[in-house]
Amino acid sequence: MSAGKPRLLMVGHMYATAFNRRKLNPLADDFEVTCVTWELNETKLFGLPLAVFEKEDHEPRYELVRLPVWPRRAGITRYVHEGLSRVMREKAYDVVLVDSEPWGLIRWQVWAMTRMMQPWAMFGEFTWENVERCGLKGGVLSVIYRLAACTHDFSISGNQACRAILLKHGAKAEMNLVAAQLGVESADFRPATAAEKAELRVKLGVAKEGFLVGFCGRLNAEKGIRELLAAVEEVRALMPERDVRLALLGHGLMDDELKAMRAEKRWLDVLAPRPHREVAEFMRSLDLFVLASKPVHEGPSVWEEQFGHVLIEAMAARVATLGSASGAIPEVIGMEEAVFAHSDAKALADVMARWVRDDEGRERLAEAQRQRTLANYTHEALGRTWSDFLLKNLKKRRLVS
Image 1 (cartoon, helix red, strand yellow):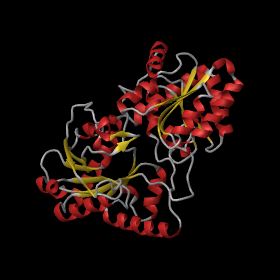
Image 2: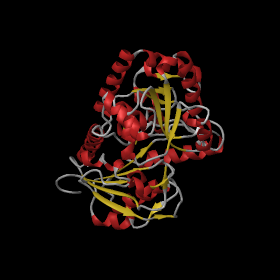
Image 3: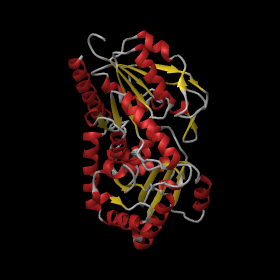
Image 4: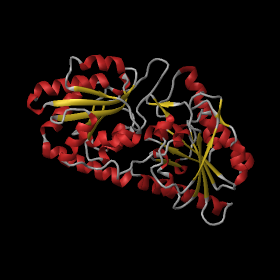
């Protein structure tokens, strides 16, 4: 074990871009951090090459190691890192943490190498998965969950439903933390004055005037895009004087459909995806942000919103933020008055109309949501939460040893 600061090895594909590594600097207050992630390659994010998102936006206080993956283009759960054994040989780590679902090959590669090459280290995993499967697949995954619970020393869950699944399969409650994976940069996602909003809208190419509702993310049906469109149309009919408009920023399966709608719905703007550092400008231009995700429980993909990082970005920018009662959205927003029934355009329209109409109430909601975000979801707040949990359990482990 290391003298001085304990050493922390973090492994995960999410850390391939600089913005997603900002959390590591606060962790470096308490740990000597090494981060292993993907090489920058032809992989795409929101339709753009991964390299577009890699722009150094902070002075790193951690060591970054990029390793090739095998097989190439295998996806985020079906790869292992070439050269990981070299990283394991270079230092003695106190904590090894992999960001992966329990069935990810990288999870088991990191676990096996930790046990063989760093047997004194505390091994843990971060996971998001919040929906249990049925049938044969569910049975296989149940076995994997139990194996994961037997082989990790601690776990971090991205939401409460994820924690419940882990505990059901044998994970220890006292060794599990519920916390976000990534924080928000409050200096970028900050409130905008009315004049700044107008300037930002001109820069984005959307109407300078009117009440602007926005969404940012995958432009797919499961994100509730059709319900959001219908709700905006209804609110426009109820309150034509507010000139409610909708801006969608992203990329997805509905791209062509939405672009075709633009000719008929002049109040709709569809903006191309852009690097994360530019998303803050979009968020700061809005009057209201909506995440209308709905569960997918049929077909090959089973999914519910696992966190909704765009929620904390909008709230940090002091934009009133509404979300559906799907997956982890209500626990992230933390305010019942800002949550509506998923898959229900009328329910969304009713809640949206309330906040479009009530300027003072919307300002109070936006301020309360910003304060909640600053307290819980900045990189610094999240780093403290992770550090406190890891240090507490590392101390407990050393006392037992």
